[in-house]
Image (tube, rainbow, N blue to C red):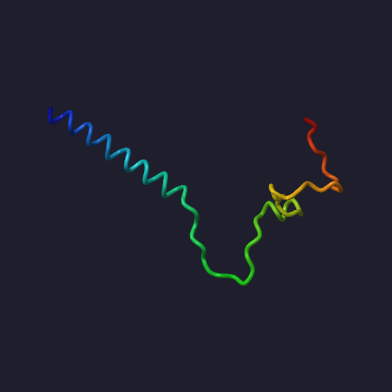
Length: 69
């Protein structure tokens, strides 16, 4: 009886430790300081274009190829 409770308690503690490890590793890194301008994400610099807005109407003058459905 006691050994069963110890095993259940050990599994429970192990799950809590695993959950706290997952939360700790998935947390966003802390900012190091305030800057005057917001930092531009790397994908914007790589693509050279702003991120498309899902709610804005699509431009008819775009040079990108769209998938035909």
